[in-house]
Amino acid sequence: MERILLTSEAGPERFADYERQGGYTAWRRAVTEGRPEQVLAEIVASGLRGRGGAAFPVGKKWQIAAETPAEHKYVVCNGGEDEPGSRKDRFLLENYPHKVLEGLLLAAYAVGAHEAILYVNHQYQQAQAALEQALAEARAAGYIGPRACGSDFAIAVRLHAAPSTYVAGEDSAAVNSIEGQPAKPRQKPPYPATAGIHGRPTVVNNVETLANVPAIVRRGAAWFRSIGTTNSPGTMLFTVLEGVKRPGIYELPFGTPLRYLYEACAGGLADDRPLKAILPGGPSSGFLTPDALDLPLDYQAFREAGSALGCGVMTFYPEGTDMVDVVLQIAEFFARESCGQCPKCQFETQQLLRILQLVKAGKATRAALAMVDKVIEQSRGQGWCSLINMPGPPLTSALRLFPEDFARYLTNGGSPAAR
Amino acid sequence: MFEQEKARLVLVCQNVDCLARGADKIIRALEERLSGEEGVEVKPYMCFGACQDGPNVVVYPDRAFYSHVQLADVDDIANHAKGGPAVQRLEEGVDPSLKALIFELLDAGLV
Image 1: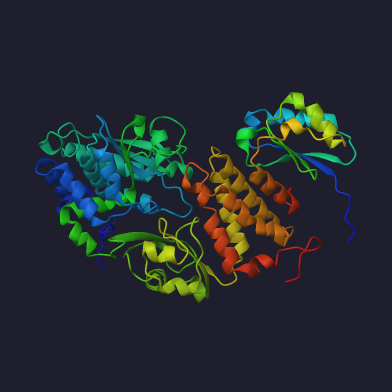
Image 2: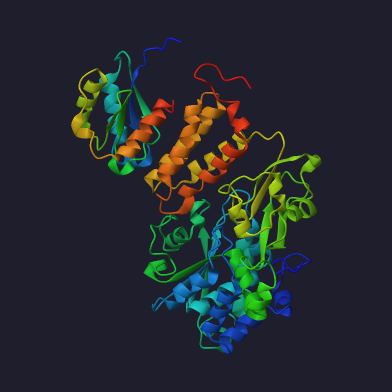
């Protein structure tokens, strides 16, 4: 299967290796012979979608920033990755820094930005070192600077350390952090693409998203669309978490059956234990049951199945897993990471956690558990970022698919109910 | 089988927003006024979801939701908790559907 991102067979891709494989040719040609509209048109035609979790069409975001009149514009590579278990962006930054950097340069050119920022989780020391080195190499080669590749296009790139909080990875939180403010989301609209850093148009793209860009510009949108499905072209990185025989990061074309990832790549569950549940897109996605193994890895297919691919963090749970423990952990995560700006988000995340703590302690009645839906309903869409909509899907899907896991903890007001 | 006579709870939100509006002083003042009061318990509450109307205090099971509570209101609230009349002037402003949800949560044992 063709790979776009994980192309190196032998460790980190070095500058010389990257150049030898055609790296920076897209950049050089675009900036010396091409026009920004051509790069933009190629990305629009490619159908590339954001890989940070929201799957927003990248070309559309670029178009908005390109068409917003402003003297200064910015592009940001969003490496504020802090989702539990997700490490694909760190992996790309550590091993393919030039690929990401070239993607960022092309984004800047396409939208007319002369300042680019690599926003990277401050705990990712190795990734930051790899980027520092890549920046030095690219500057020395003349790819970055006041006259990039000898053209009249000026581009400056710098690193900015992102705090390790979940919301710091939200695009407007990244904008705030880069401005020197706390990394908390802004009320939207305006979206960063029209009014981001210092009120100027700012494109914020995920690391993996940008890593796709050089190959698309070099080889064309038609080539990119020959991989994957019509609605989800290209490949995606899937992070399979511990519990399977071969946990790791796998790059697969969209449309590949989930079963291939689970069985052929990850080797199935350790000790060949039977599968009980799948959480396919990180803690904000809905749980699925083993019959979902035949779904194609595709945004739409997972949405139709009541879940989401998110940023591709997959967890497979064996029979015997207590789903109450799993959803309790997820509720703890969201209660901890709710940044405190939006009343309804604080209320929701803390009430859901409280309900689940009571369930686990054998002190919740059926009526208390039934409050879950009402709390979620009361909060839907009432926040400045999407965190407020995240605790719902895993919890409501677990309640729907595994009611017996919850029922055994419920009390009728006296002693815990018998199993 | 025989429902115990429930204590009257005075729940004072202690979440970030209410605290920033002085909810820490409110809970201390209420504790002071109501210490040793039979059948009345002052308790911190995590969040009533009405931060913009804080500090918020709920007297339960009386279903009184007091918002924009100031130190000057503490005597009247304490008086209510001791069996006096509810403090009507503090009962306006909170979204009725949120109010209903909060009491439903408390009724479901989420105190």
